[in-house]
Image 1 (cartoon, rainbow, N blue to C red):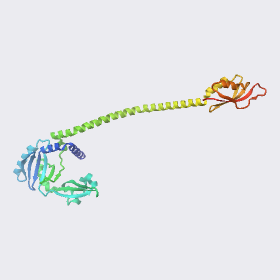
Image 2 (cartoon, rainbow, N blue to C red; image 1 turned 135 degrees about the horizontal axis):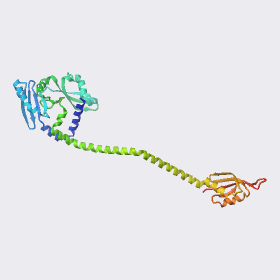
Image 3 (tube, one colour; image 1 turned 90 degrees about the vertical axis):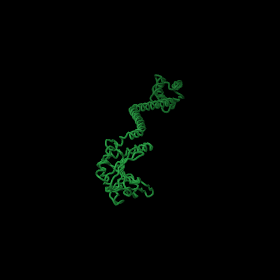
Length: 345
């Protein structure tokens, strides 16, 4: 049941894509079997584009019924696409009235009407054939006005009983003025309507552009999926390369800072090497400190005063001077000294 309703909805959407002039030409050329009900008998006729052919009358006599059935058999037998069948009712048999329902029921009007039919009419939903047309939507009271068309099942049951031996199930009911219509739910498979070559051609013409568009979108989505997969595969390597590049940049930045600091305040290893080389073998250090470009050395030397001249001749050191008096060590040929010098830029 759900599949049938889904296919019917899909087929309505496809038909809406077919241009109106093509649909009109198709419908006008399609034969219609009209069964006119008088309350006692059924007059059958075949309406084609530009003409009408009488097939006979049912319900008047057994002989007349047999002749009518014989006339209808060639029309119905062996046809993969039977003509549309309309049961035309006498005036006044189809009743109409306007009803008002909440706008929220518009998405499920069939169910809402079936549930409210006892309140809206003197009949229950299972005793009538009915259809509805939206007349107006009122936004302020949030309501929708509906034109309800209905006919008692018992009124048309004799006509349906007469058509049953012929294997005919009407597609819809209409009044004599052809202004009121009630579609009937039949067991006719919706697939059979697709067997008409004209319908197939129209559906194909409507579906071809849609299929081209769908194919383009499918190809684009496929290429996008392939690119996404390739990007995902390369992402770990790209992240690793980014991390390594950042580490290299951080290392270069650190080396640049260290080199600038060494130029400004002096390289400790170079200062230590230069100090060791310029001291005489008879001299030794007891303390050495290098802080913010200022070197202070303390120790003992037989010729402490000569160390100032040695430091002055060394390019790394500038402005050497004693920071404390030179004192003689008792009992030794040595003096205690403490010298300060500037290093770096």
